[in-house]
Length: 64
Image (cartoon, rainbow, N blue to C red):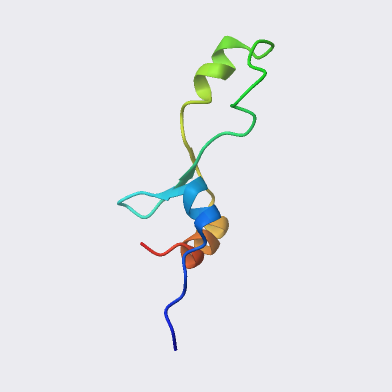
């Protein structure tokens, strides 16, 4: 059986940490920032840890 190809669109959006957690960026953090609260804008830079079920699906598509 041939090797599975990595889904590049998913690989660009998610990162797998050394401990195996899957992290992603925030939604709506790219433009129209002028009407968003300062606290909200600051939090956009922090990554979000993906839930266990979704992380399992992402890991199966993205090989390290």
